Image 1 (tube, each protein chain N blue to C red):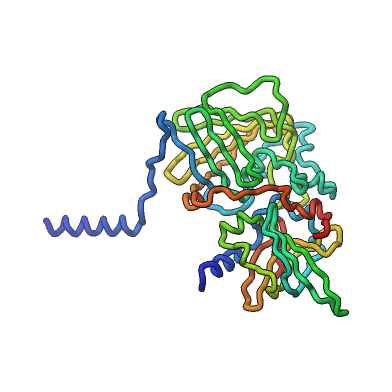
Image 2 (image 1 turned 60 degrees about the horizontal axis):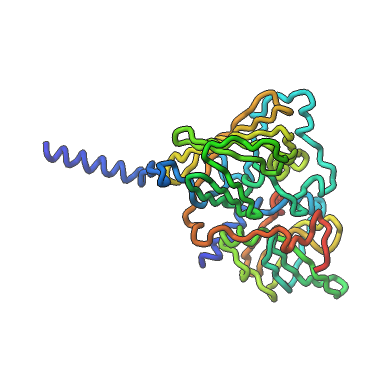
Length: 249
Length: 130
């Protein structure tokens, strides 16, 4: 019997070993017990894929409302319209945070700060449950406010300018997507293990779509990027050929 | 194989898209691919894209200095490509797409050295040339 038990233990150890180290489900927490998202993260991606940039899946789009066709604004051939970033104009949210650049998160009890390496764009998100500001001007990055639902941080963002939804035109040079000034996003961040944030992203644009829809993405942590941190990325440093119009070197 | 060379080959293997601050489609003419052979004269390791310049000898014996843009320095560094991966004096073959204004500038898609190493990649939205 002892011999049988010994063999069983050896066999189970072999099975565990073959499966590799178990993924840690212990997540870091801040002093107040909330999940701590601080760290260096890859940009949000569809789980199991490495396609960049991340874009919204057209197959999930609900039916358009009347007039919602403005969402698919045609490209004009004028780079100032087709790609304002060529002139160092902002990407806006969420586009800037879906490109192929790391995102650093820094968190305390009142605030989550998300910084993307791309132009060092920073979102400063109150996470103390406060409401949106009233009577503020629309912006490229909107007004984000966060609240906790258990271990999930819910970030609600409103007050956007009409601007590019995502970087879809990298994949489809003929299609341009412009959200409206009624654009409203809800992000749900849940740290499901030590290296992963489940990131559910709901788009609600009532001037364009008949219903909201949700993408299920994730952030993957990269501790090896801590050593260098985010690199500097200053758009105007040497933007030599804005819109394909080059200056002499 | 040195680790950096491996990193460079890795970059090549995924040459379709490396970080750019904007879509190259808006700036470069996909209908005008360019391929030049020449000597690197200068490398600008700066944002939002690196630029490098290549003296190309023309058929009539004259020399044209071409400028090519690549990825963002930070993204390239994170992938093991540094400001010394390509130096003035290096002989290179550059494939890319010409700037829309028709000047001697373009998007540097791939750079090939005489020993066969290929570095740097297309800006996003550009398909690598075969």
